[in-house]
Image (cartoon, rainbow over all chains, first blue to last red; front, side, top):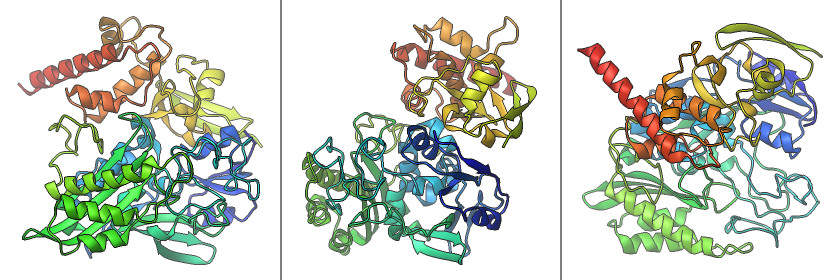
Length: 351
Length: 165
């Protein structure tokens, strides 16, 4: 690991001021950053440890029914907060389907949003990767690319965004609060992650020195009774999604009045297919309309390598997530969150 | 530039001067505090052999900078037994053959204690397996590990019923 300068500010403004050197990076728990630093895929010259910065670790219900989550709230604490689980069940399910209990205890909300792709070529400094080293090429093209993107990719980069958490968040219109040298601003989470285009090294919409301070969710209680996250993995637990889907429906008198759908594991960002949502709105829930929505969601998909199977898989996971959402949010989270193989309904998990 | 941190490890206050910011909590324990019970498996947060409790929560010590743990309360496998009296989870691992080669065992035991403290798995074997999925065992002693956790959960439930009575 390249050595670095270490600073530990206690206010947001100190943290931002400390970022004013080339190669500075914010460190929260470090579950992704330290891992990448160990292999040399990321080489910051200064780490700004923000874990002592005041005011970033609260969860606050807002007057409009929404929720503001501090960037340093730990994944496990959010997922096991009973009030949060009732209000945003698909988000809790997604959080608990990700990583391991140890990592969820450490990993933060802001860090989850900013985690890097797990593309093996990005993580291996001896491979060509335009995302890591602009202009070096992409060894994933023509390499081991079964798990790579089928939507929104370019010849420059075919990596996918690995987060589960971000998938239902994008479906529910989450907003990211950002603070930087120019002051405070906010953007929809959907606009945080960039598609690769010709500049995959530009991974997010953040400017140098900008810090995510909070995540905001609007009131989505109308969708909470029909919300699910479903994630297909190569093993039942502790694995990234091959493909995943978050589905949330508002159903009144047998008609879908509002639909939200987002896909994970298919693109460099959580994918929100609005055309599919439009097809669902006003329809009666059922297999045929769900299949039509899924067809629309993947209409522009094309394989980036040995991964054509992902397109049909994503359609089926979307249909299944919609069916599960229509059937209703379970009263208790399943023993195996988000797993298509969950056999035990489970009644002991208070979350 | 030297860094100085203070932390509590297994109940003992320790002040450590670090000449290098790259030291992880795992390497601090093993190489500088003479506590090699915590194991280094993958060093990438994938195997769980390095699991310790920090402020009561199980984490991967290989993915935490020692500097970030300034002020923390750390519990490792060495801090469990009281003299010759094993911690109930240690005893249950022996009773149920929860290991073979033993390399992953300190991490498994610390993770199991974390799981029991979290209080979310109860006596549902599927929830225990899911919650222990961050600890790999190449000898595949998983069946015994789940039985050991179930036994401790059961005796804790009995004890709390006794207390309530």
